[in-house]
Length: 490
Image 1 (cartoon, one colour):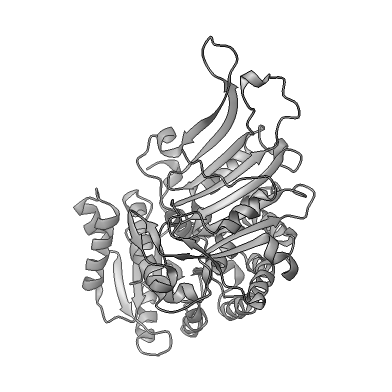
Image 2 (cartoon, helix red, strand yellow):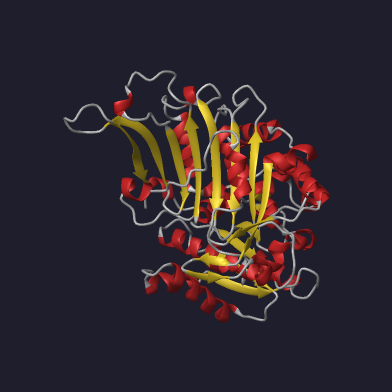
């Protein structure tokens, strides 16, 4: 165990929605990895909560299968030791049955930090928090984690935040966005503020444009019911992608204290130039996938998966602008979608051309420098530079990357999952990588007019074939400004 993985204080992690997909695929395996690494005190308890009529042993069997699936090299003795921490309670947010017994069970370890992770529909956040407050489980070292989305617009987000605030103080409330736990996002801070090379160039005087892409090859699958009421704008842009934009564009904070960082992120959100109804048709693109080829085979269209007609978007591209001195005039192109050709999340910062080329035509064309930050699947950083092609055949220019894969650079097999860092940050009481209420409000203030403009237009999303990079209109969106989407991912 190294200095960066010191054991945290004993805690109770209570996962509401404990039998759900997020819990089984992500949260519980993440806790297992931290347990194996020695960061979790064996006296801690992890308690799954759902309505299903299970007991400790049946839930542990489910958890064991999940760990075996997520960690092929997991040792039997480690799994056995971890399962001793796993418990299960059947509870319904709308009924009294079982809550007294649950409160007594939590009270058996009154000295533990309590983390209540609401991995449920946001419609249950208010009632769950009320019941936790009714049984005084919000007292002492208690924290609540809210999964996105926080509402479907500003009004519903405010209602949820108001209800949660009746029970948990803002300092106890952790609004999680797992993208902020990824290594590359963390490295944005180190890259910008730990190297003299970049920060002097990190402005409109030197940067031509920025692209942020979050692409998925999968369709909506079993999430169709949720997704059709959300869409790509609410599911990805309003939270994940705007948070990446904040980390990329914020001013240097005075320190890494939680509110110092979050204050600077808030300034970015409040500086986003509003997209009016008149501008929405020019600066935004909505798409929806139809049948095509993806993941090595034929796949149905969105409406085929849903089983009915729908105008919900599965793809969004937006040209955004930040109206402040650092970024005035720099376009930020945001893009996300399902059933695209690759699964990737990346940020591409394209620098301006050199003002004058001293090289003749025979040397080749000068290419712009690009900084590519890959969040998934292979986390790392590439800096594209122009150099001379080796050899005696005259001066020939070549565009090549300085390529740092985190796995190769640090000699590790696998990077920790974002949830591993974020859940333990909740236990430590460190809210730096979590959204403050005013950030959520500022994000909805920007997103709501776009959603309203789409609804008022009555236009259906533009269709694109599954396995392609979205509607042709998204290409036109960026090429109108003389730019091209970065799709060279070699």
